[in-house]
Image (cartoon, rainbow, N blue to C red; front, side, top):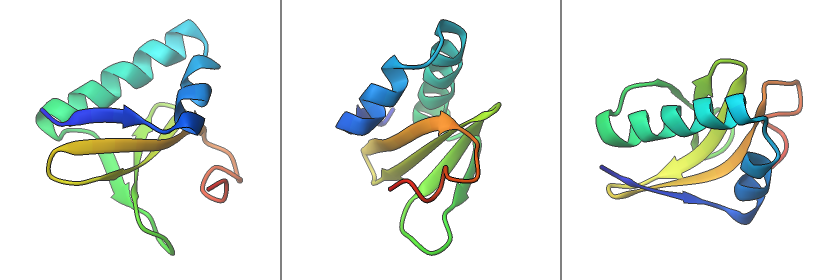
Length: 83
């Protein structure tokens, strides 16, 4: 299992989610960290990946042992421009 680390901004985003959304995002991240399963795509125009969890997106970078969550939020037109 990879270690999941939240950036300061991602932790703030995570804390601002509703309880249901927070639980879904947490389950999705843990599932990806343990099994590698999930709707993950490489980002265009910048380094990193996105994990789709329902209407929410987690923008992250990863290496062999860690996942660094950079942004967590609803899919909007500004989701991929934020950072």
